[in-house]
Image (tube, rainbow, N blue to C red; front, side, top):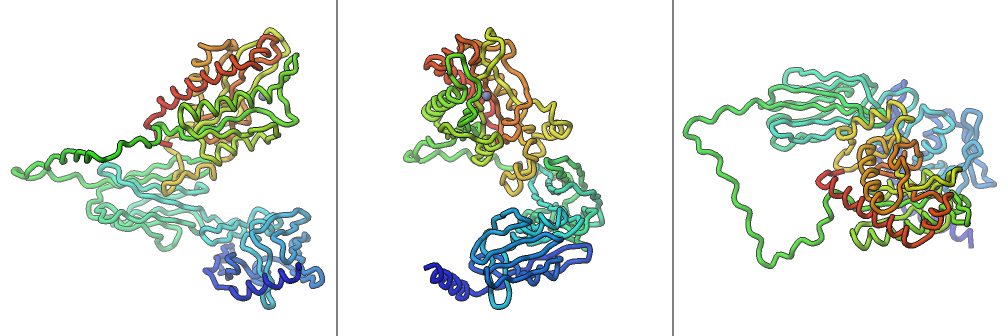
Amino acid sequence: MASAIVLLTLAAVAAQGPAPAAPYSVFSRGGRQPLPVRTIAGQDMFALDDLARLFPLTVREDALAGGLTIGVNNQTIVLTAQQPLASVGGQMVSLPAAPVHEGRSWFVPVDFVSRALAPILGSGLELRKPSRLILVGDIRMPRIAGRVEPLGSLLRVTLDVAPATPHTVTQDGGRLLVRFDADALDAQLPAAPAGSELLQAVRLADPPTVVAFDLGPRFASFRTADQPAPGGATRIVIDLVAQTETTPPAGTPLPSPPPPPATAPADTPPLLDLPPTGGLRTIVIDPGHGGEDTGARGARGTVEKTVALAVARRLKAALEGRLGVRVLLTRDGDQTIAIDQRAAVANNNKADLFVSLHASASVRPAISGAEVFYLSLAEYGDEARRVARGAAEALPVLGGGSRDIEVIPWEMAQARHIDQSAAFAHAVEAALRDRVAMSPRAVQPAPLRVLGGANMPAILLELGVLTNPQQEQQLAGDDYQNLVVQGLIDAIVRFRASTAGETR
Ligand SMILES: [Zn+2]
C-alpha cells in the first residue's frame, strides 16, 4: 500500500515537471550570483548541487535509507525522502515540503536555507523570500518600503528603512537623492501620484544604493526628518513643498461652493451595521493561570484559576450581549497556557483590548481589595521609553497594513500603548470603586510579563484577595462576580467613547 502511494506521488511530480521560476539573488562580499529556482508541485525549490556550489556542503546520498546526509561545518543535516523534516545538528526542523529526487538532482524547498543551513552557518545567512534574496556574510542591504501621500499643498514621502542605515538627502538639479551607506537596497518604492506636479517618479538611481525622486514643475523646496521606528528601524519623512499659488487676477470668479449633499432616496435603508467608532471590535480576556498552575488559594479551597475563568466567562457573555463586540478567551477550560501565548492570542486576533484576570494572595489576611495594573516601562530601559514617545508617529503601517508586530521586539509591543493602557486602568478603577472594595493602591504600573507582549491597550485586574476570608467568600459568589463584570463593562464603554474617532 505504501509503495503504491510513493509511485503515485512520484508520477504526479513528474507530470507537473520541475517548472523554472525567477531565480533568487545571492549577495555576498564576493558579489551577486543568481541561484536557480524550480517550482515542483507548487513549491519553490533549490537544487542541492547549486547550494553546494555556494556553501561549503558535502552531500552524501544514502540510497538504502532513501535519504541524504549533508555535512556543513562539521555538523550534519539529515534529509529523508518523503518527509518534510530535517534533522539539523540533531534538532528536528520542519520544511514546507519533502526533498524531491528529480533526475540526478535533489531539490529542497527554499526554506531549507533559513531553517536548516542558517542555524549551522550562523547569523551571516538570511533568506528574504518576498524579494527573492539570500544575503551571505555582513552584507548591508536595508529593506526599504515607501509611500507617498498628499498633505494639503505638500506631498509627503515616507521611507521605512530597516535596519536603520546612515543616509543623506540632497537636491541635485531636478532630482532629490537619498543616498544610503549600504551595499545594496532591498527596496519597494512607491509610485508617484498620477498627474502630480511635485513628483514625477521614484526610482533606484545609479549606483542602486541611491533612491532618486524626479521632481515636478511646481516643486519649490523640501524638508526632511528622521524618526526612530520600532525594532531598530528608521522612518525618513520627506516633505515636498509646492510653489505658492499666484494670486488669481482680478475678475476671476471665485470657485463655486460645493454642491449641497444629495438627499438620500427614500428607499435607502438606514445604516445600522456600521462598526462602532473607536475601533473596539475585539476584546481578549485572559483568565490567569490554569491546569496545574492554580494560582492563589484561599483557606476554604477557592483557587484563583477557577475564579478568573468564571469571571471571564461572565464578562464575555455580557460584552457580547450588550456591546456586540467579539470576545475571545485565552483559555475556556482548565488548561495550562504559557505566559507569552496569552498576549499572542490577542495579537494574532488583532484585539483592541486585553484584560488579564487574576486574584491575589497576601501573607497578611487583613489585606483586601481589587487592584488594577498596567505595564511599567521602568524595567524595560530606554528603548521602551523611546518606542512609547514615538507612539503616534512611528506606527509602521506600510501599504495600509499594520505590520508593527513584526518589527517591534516582543517585549516592547506594549510600550506604544502605555498611555492608553494607563487610561483604561484608571477607567476600570473608577468603575469598580463604586461597586467593590479597592486596595489602598488601586491603580499602579508593574513589570508584568503577560502585558509586555500585548500589542494593544492592556491591563491586569486582581479581582480581590483570596487569602482574606471575607473576600474569598465574595470572590466565589455570583454577586461579587456580577458587580465586577458590570464595572468592567462600564469602564470599557467609557474607554470606547474616549478613543472614538482615533484610528489604529
Ligand atoms: Zn495570578
